Length: 177
Image: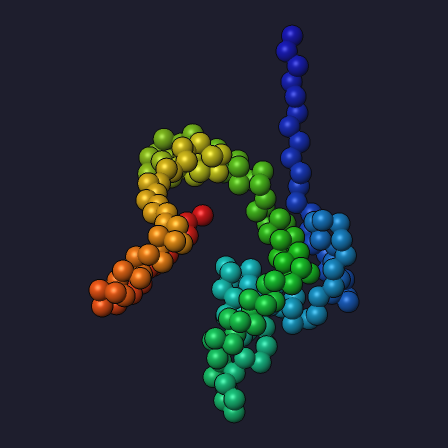
């Protein structure tokens, strides 16, 4: 007799934001947001990651001086700074987790794409992504052309060029890591 194993899936828990805009992140830590920060994060998610529109609509002052026209450069910079703050990213990550954007769900959707036969282009992209993520592609080998000169050789060549009345040679050096 074979034993049937029940697969348990973790249901995403709702992010509860208290009256003081504090919440518990998925890491178990308590974070506190300001009203505008929460509004920005919610709009950022609603606008599918459009940080500029999110910060403008959240009410941050990003207008040109003495104008009602938003300065998109300032908006982008301010939004970028907000997205580097741990309490804001924790809130966004918790909301994404709540919506089902987690590793298990993405792996399940990826497996579906790998096993479907209706759209082979999508299947090929899914396989390509799988290989990239799992490191299944061979490492790229680069041909490296290295010319190594001693300082004394370079000094000799420079002296000879100077004696012949030729201008010094300028070298472009590129370091490849």
